[in-house]
Structure formats: C-alpha cells, structure tokens
Image (cartoon, rainbow, N blue to C red; front, side):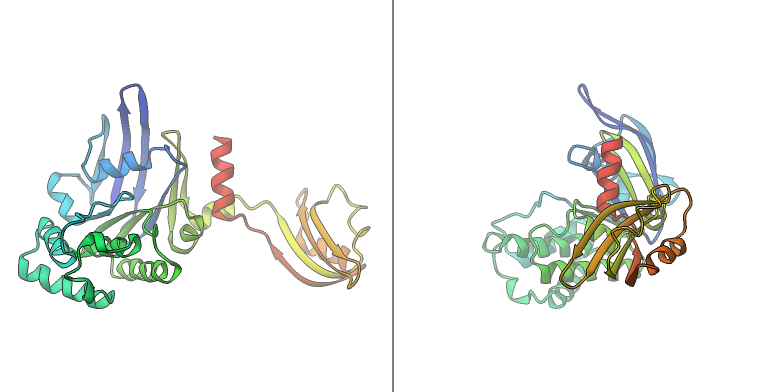
Length: 304
C-alpha cells in the first residue's frame, strides 16, 4: 500500500533520515520502531506531508503521494493538539469537517463514536476539563472518524490506564479487520508483540532491521531452552561442555526443584539434552526460549 523509497532528510548539519526505504502492505499493522532521535517522527511527518524529503519519494497505492491524499490518512501524533477552550463535541465536529465530511455526515459519525466510547456526557465539556487520558480518547476518535485507509499512530497508549489502553487496542484491531492499514510507532515492545505483523527498526537515521515479526524472531533464535526439573542436575551436563552451555541454574535443595537455562552447541538437538538429563533428574517441563522483540531491539541497536 505504502512504499517509502530512498528517503533522505536533513536539517542543517543533521541527517534525520539517510536513504531509508520500506514497504507497508495493505491491511497490515506495521511497527515503526527506533530509539529516541532515530528518525521515526521525521518519516511520519513526511508521510503526512507536514515536511518534504530532500530526496526520494513515497508511493500510496502505486502513485506518488499527493496533497489530496491527506484525506485518506489518519494521524494521531505523540504531541496532542486539541484546542483547550473548545467544547469536546464541537471540536471533534470541526476536525472532521477539515477531513472533508459534511456537517450532517460528521454529526452522525461523531454521535456513533461518542456512544461507542461511552463519552456522550462529555459533549458540552471543554477540552481543558478533561484528564490527559480522556483528551487522548477524544483525539483518537477525531483521528479515525473519517475512516482513513491508512492510520498512523504515534505512541497511542500514552496517558491511558490499563482498561482504556485495552479499549483502544481492541478498536485498532477492529479497524484493521475492516481493512485499515496501520503504522504503529511506540516504545512499548509488549504492544508491538501483540499488534504488529511486520516491523522496521531505524537507528541514527538508518534502517537496521526489517521484516515480518515472526521471521525476525525466528532469525534471532539461538537454540536456548528452559527446563524445570526435580533432582540434582549439577553434574549431568558438566561432562559435555562441547554440547551444552549453561546460561543460568537455580536449585532449591529443600524440595529438589531446579530451573536450568541451556544453550545447545554445535548442532546438538533438544532430544539429546533430554536424554542426558532424564538419566539424572525428573524433567517436569521444557520449552525453547525465543528472544522477544525487546531483546531484539536492544541487541540490534547496540550492534548497529
């Protein structure tokens, strides 16, 4: 759906994006990740045509991005932008008119979303009377009201308690099920694990990692297993240092229950690990330790 091709963006002597390219597929939830100052916000602003690239281009559905395309995009910025003295209902109506909706169509959609999010009682309240989380909910509604094809969310869960964060998460998933493509930028890696199909990781203006989340996690697997056992495993693996590397070992001598994290070396399989341990202990559980996106993020940034 969206192709970012060789984007270069500089501010004075600072390079914000260094020939970054990526492809975001129709109907996906795409994670745009990176540490602070990596270039994520610069890219988001270019997609929203707030700023222009120095070089490169962005294609939307195969055509170069045009000013008219902004009506097909919904953007929730990290820095919120509601007018504090306006009444909530009129404010959302005003923002929806800016996206090209007629007043009658805007009124119908605003009422629908206010009922859906259980905020009908807020209609006459001024924005400044609302908490940060309540304002965030209002701005989310204003972002999705015009039913955008592409939804860009920059730290969408900021200010929310767990109940409302889950509510917004479910709304994002529902919009995605209906066909909306989502670009999701956040530092909350647990949200990336829950929501994203694919990711790109930017660091110091350069793309350093890209792909489907499942493929990236598989790429970072390192043959590590976590076992829970009962008995005494102190000497079970020591005779095979060329096969097994013990990463951690906890053992309670009172009940004999232990936990062992082991990396298998030189192509050794998990069955061989079990065979050796079963001769000495009772294995109660075993599973592969697959690196989470948090660990992959930290490792990739450090290596780059």
